[in-house]
Image (cartoon, rainbow, N blue to C red):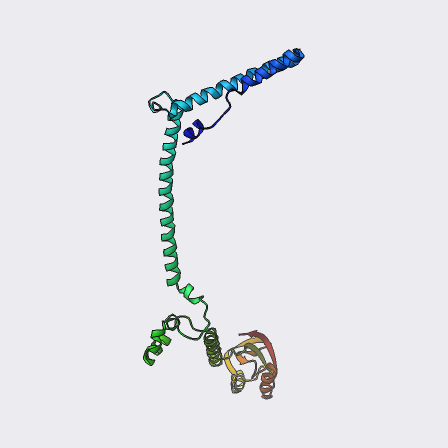
Length: 280
């Protein structure tokens, strides 16, 4: 269609002839100028070349629009037709690719929307503006005549619930856990601080009955006191002292109380010293 349009276009192909005639007329009137004549000769040569090119284009266009255009040696026209045909084929293939991509994108969007609807996280984050079940929200007007039993079932399968109900449930669970912790702590026995004490009980002289002295010491009984092992340790000049171990509860029995109770046996005990004191 472009070639047919150019055939009917009115172009002044002979303009260079009129330009040459006008130039020669003014040269005869005013006389030739050397510098300008050279420039004009160069311009006229360019104009002639342009005119020849235009004539060739017009001839090629006229030959392509004639009855024998299809069988003539028009290489440029055939090449143009081949390129146009190849572009059309490529365009058709690109359209097919675009359609396939659109179908794939639509399928992916459908799957994504289905996954979002079935996801529990999506249901949990959905906004809730009324304290009613979602099934009753989307019901048409005809379903408003449902029975009370169906309404109860819908309430039982409420997937969302309100924020107030969640807050109350969280508060109840927190109070329950605090109560269980307090009960467990109350049942746990308190840690009792105890100490291990090693006492040195010294007699008056070597004639003191050490067995009787140990019996007197062990006769002291009180809450939080437990007697352990004992032995006789020589001091000198045939005199021995009694070393006896005991475990006491710090809150109930102290070293001062033990010394006071043991020194009450004045017939056998001269003095009492604490040889070692360790926390249990």
